[in-house]
Image (cartoon, rainbow, N blue to C red; front, side):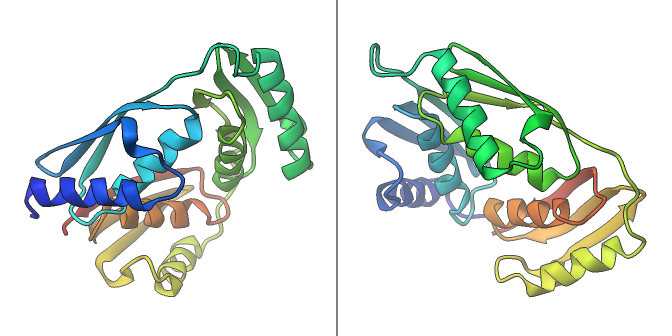
Length: 217
């Protein structure tokens, strides 16, 4: 295991390196490989980028994101404007399923509800809304519509792992039980763990992923 101080130094360097993050009001603390981020940022997307920066650092076993979004009085759109912008963005980005999603906004907090066919759609909807100016929190309550997974779903996921430059396929075990995928084995970073889960969710028919991968730098 890498020393906590080395991980902290690398996370701080990564935050300075990433152009999407203003790290001037952020602090980093590391204990037993778990990174805690604290501070304030002007937009919800900044909070998301800061967490992703920490996840990419080797040795990071987990992230506690205690960053708060501080909306400047008079500069942020109203809840009605946020809702309208989110609805318009979804209609433009995903017109085929936009009508299946309900957007509820309260004090900058956005709640997404509805039912879609795949996790990738739910994730893309959240990503689209996350970028809307004025959003401070996104609660993604979108459900995945159950349907039969193909019989060879495990082989499809394993093949996707082998194609990926970000996942060590040889150290990941994949098990399919009906429409749920179970991942176990070893990865070298929290980022790799997340990529493995994202890949498993992309398989057709999957409505659940249990990610039991262990991070070993």
